[in-house]
Length: 187
Image 1 (cartoon, rainbow, N blue to C red):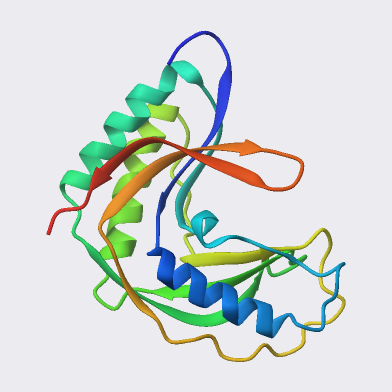
Image 2: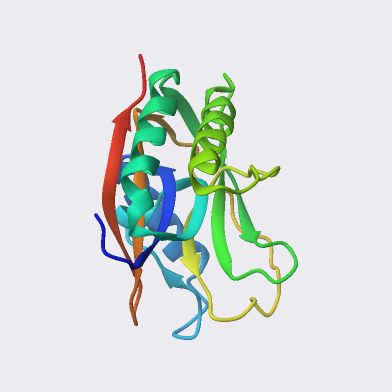
């Protein structure tokens, strides 16, 4: 890709669609009293564990970022993940309902750290210090009126076998995600 524009990019892991569907069912139930002005639920295909948000990057960087993603994936292992508690993010002015993602073996944290280093080297900025693994299920225009206790999420396990570089297209109703590079994780 070339030609002087920019693309909004991020690297992520995708849960299986069945996991997304189960979480969507849970979110519909958990938010059942929110009404039309409540958070907008995401479709299962739009759910992902963001490893690194890159923001707007020049089109000319996409090939190099894809190469960095593939290089980081070569040394990474498949991640065995499980869902955790529901959370509102960000903590101060929450606008997203999410579910924590846990990784008992530490493979996810290792992948995220190595991937962030590789991508930041190409993009030319400092590696972020914080990483909180989660799956976003719903987005709100404003912070929820009250932080009522949410019911427990279903205990789901899934395997992440591929890391993806996405381009995010912000549209009126929802964001649309385009895969621009992907790499399998080692066994």
